[in-house]
Image 1 (cartoon, each protein chain N blue to C red):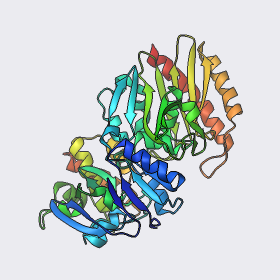
Image 2 (cartoon, one colour; image 1 turned 45 degrees about the vertical axis):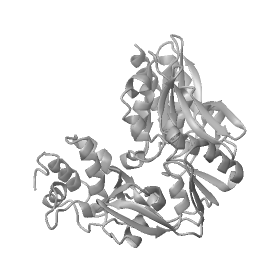
Image 3 (cartoon, rainbow over the protein chains, first blue to last red; image 1 turned 180 degrees about the vertical axis):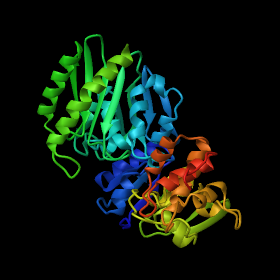
Length: 275
Length: 166
């Protein structure tokens, strides 16, 4: 199908973009890579009055290191981050997870921030952002605010972004020496995960584990690091607590079973990576 | 700042296969439709129109993307490359020839998109592994050949042997 008619605006600066959003609010949709939005427009799942194309705002097209955090601007594509030479050293969790985001062809256009903005419960980038305790930078004519990932994503496709706000960047804490690991189960490579698990070793005593695909948004829990048996028990508790859900891809029971199987492997992987 | 009203047709200029061209489009016109219907280059095929099948894959500034998930106006000023650019007159390029050698197409509907994906991929990675080829091919659907011939063709184009039992 074809999209319903809309006005197209392509601002050159962040200031222009947020003025348009302030004017149109809910009637406007921000277009970055468009790898979800264009499909939704074509299927007429959304029909905005105004589409605001931010891909030619030069100040959004940058990867920067600021105070130990890697800031990825809203126009940066997933393949550009994947090809960033420092990625494996600075953001090893993203180096592991990004190859699972869509396909080579969609990563050429899809953006890192767009994936966070869309907030699919099974998507990899929001999961990585949540596990690493990253931040989302939101800008409007009212000012700028920075939200932790856990406060930004509120549920399935639901976020704390106000209608007049533009996500200008996301910030991932740089790895330092801590270990990370990622794994997902999908029917085919490039599909949304049925269950995805990411882990980051915080200190000698604890590990942050994040689970995608089980609840409306990435679930992050802290577990103790004292032998494999303990991790397995903790993941068993998390599986029952999160419960999972039934859809056409998998039953809730299958989701719990997948978490039980890959959870301990991911935790062990993160510990090994930290060693 | 570029602004086009929903009822307006704007003149969109871009480079298609090295030639500077322009045509008129409403904001909602997809690049796939612009290339086919406005510019008249019908080598690019349109399958699902929501980014799943990969038929409509073209290069924008060298990068393989879904033209059905791109607005025509977004390609303004960019270099778009389609399957028509590959052959030199009647002579197939190495990738196309490898497709013929390995029976990598039957109906040919998906082929233009697959050729463009691997045009980008092989430019970045001239000697990929079979697993890497399979991963990139994962972004396309082919409903007649199965994928073995396509994988063999890409490997042959990349300097390998192609299908062993051909």
